[in-house]
Every structure is written in structure tokens, then in C-alpha cells.
Image (cartoon, rainbow, N blue to C red; front, side, top):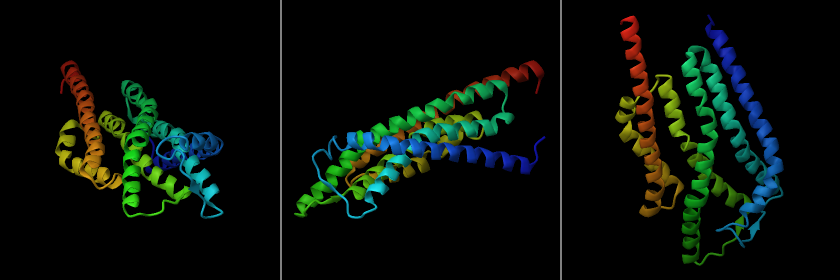
Length: 246
């Protein structure tokens, strides 16, 4: 039987492993930053636009921003695996196999979130802000750090929100959450997701709705998947009771 200090030591070890993957991911990200940057500056809406450096550190800062985003691609699945390994001793063999299957989908959902935020949300936000600048007859001179900070401030939160179904299914497997609790939390969840949609998009109803609607749909999909997992748990519990008694 592990003591509280043993659990704390184990958790610390898992966190260190995750940080190691993050650092290794950032090193890999530094090498991948050039091709990713070259691809992104040839795509709309920045294609043909001149980006400026306003500081001697802008180039280095840009490399680090790209390295961090690329590192998340490696670190998130690693963090999910380390979390699974931490709770593994408390799970049965079937639960261990079932929860381990969630780890690859952490990467899949993150990439789906990146694609949605880059190809759908970001162009709306960019076009709105540039239209306002043109309406005010402003000279559009963009710093490279400001542009990519604006971009990543949209990409990262939305991409992480796309992990919601995986997180909810995992917590349902651990019997921490269930569909009844999720349904009770629906109003609060909707409110938070709408706030996120408003914050990362231009202040107009159509853009807000185009972002908030998929996020709300993600929550409802999460509730549905949680119901599937919870139903199987109830069936397993019932079968156990019939075989061994209450």
C-alpha cells in the first residue's frame, strides 16, 4: 500500500517526465520552426503581407513561440500517458486497457482543434481587425511578433478545448464524472464556452456564433460519449451484483 508521500513522489516523477517531453518537443520545434513559418506566411490572409521586426529579439522570440506550439504536439500525448500511468494501479485490467485507448486521441483532437482554429476562426478575426483599420484609414504595419502572438492566442485555447471529449470520457471511466453531473453543469458550460467564443473572435454575432456553436457541440458530444461509458459501467455493475450479490 502506497503512502501519501509515495503518491506525491510518483506524481512528481510523472510531471518531470512530462516536462522532459516538453523540452525535447521544443528542441524539435526549433528545427521545424523554419518550414512551418515558411508555410504559414505563404497562406492567406498573411500571403504577400510584409511583416516587420521592431526589436532585435523578435526573431528569437518567434522561434520560441513556434517551438512551444510544436512542443505541445509531443507533450500533450505524453502528459496523457503519464496521467494514465499515475492512475493505472487503481484501475482494473479492463479499465486500464479502455483508458489507455484515449491517449492517441489526445493528439488527434489537438490537431483537429489546430486546423479548425487556423483555417476557420483566425481568418475571421484577422479580416475583422484589418477591416476596422482600413475604415479608420490606418497604415497597416504589422510586427511579426504581434501578428503571431495574435494568431497563437487564438489557436492554443481553441485547440486545448477540443480535448474536452477525451477528458470527459477519461473522467467518466474513473467514475469522477457522469452524464447526470454534466447535464446539471450544462448552463455553466455553455456560458463558459460562449465567453471563450466571444473573447477569441471579432465582436460580431455571426463570428461569435460560428465559434461558440462548434464548442457547444463538442460539449454535447462529450455528454453523449460519457453516457455511453456510464451505461456500460452500470451494466457491468449489474452483472457483478447478479453474480456475487449486493
